[in-house]
Length: 153
Image 1: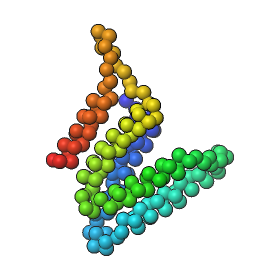
Image 2 (image 1 turned 45 degrees about the vertical axis):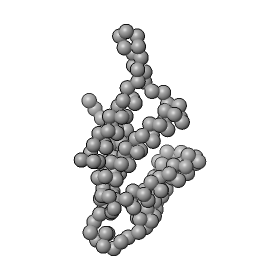
Image 3 (image 1 turned 135 degrees about the vertical axis):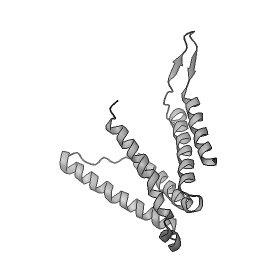
Image 4 (image 1 turned 60 degrees about the vertical axis):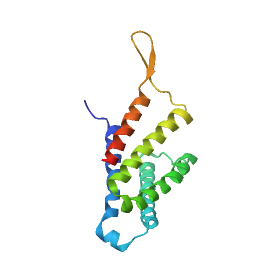
């Protein structure tokens, strides 16, 4: 089965999100006692610079202008404290426990936001006898239990 470019991007996002906190545990960083706010400021600044470059590149290549949306501001308002909390938690708990807890919490929050707040419909499965059921909540529970198992192992 061929992997789509969107799937490749999702895998890359997971790899990058799962690996950037590793540098927070380097002995030199721990010894320097670098404040989490400094790391988050550096990370946010790099994202802003890269984002601006990508917008300019898109404008140069296709002529399509930048379109502003308040959803981007809302997203950043959630992303910045999330990064700050991750950066503050990693030296205290370790990369594995923080990333598992973050992934589990994010999975649950995304599921609830999508199904309850944004009205995304869950796939309804039909039994041969005509009954219906939802698998998504069971899969979600299984994923969360698996993450909890890894966390407490």
